[in-house]
Length: 161
Image (cartoon, rainbow, N blue to C red; front, side):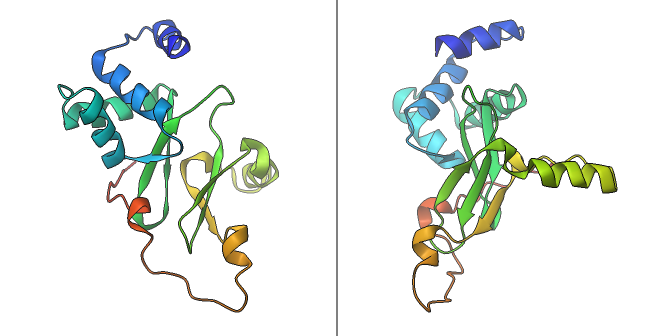
């Protein structure tokens, strides 16, 4: 938390109570959290921080590069601390909903080719790649893909750009 506070200060920002509560919730998480999961965690640890403050704080921390958010299937958005390695890519299994972190340079060649051929600057850290995880891909002969992800992977938060 001290390194995040130092980073915020270096950008002329303060460590407010809502920021501390959101950052604590994310740092205590074992994976990516939905907006509702962050709100719930903050409500448990800092009940005085309102839901709207949690949302505004997540947006501000994302804009500052302290928190990374990724758009998952079915309109869901997940949040996590960016970490020392910086933003990275995500893949989501379209069958079980599992999220896997991937190295940021995985699509470097694709990004280079898109830039050269189309003048397009790719930011693949903002959305999750879709496919099948190793476990689901190994299921022999079962092509069934669930229409709805498990409840803990559906978040209902829509983020517009």
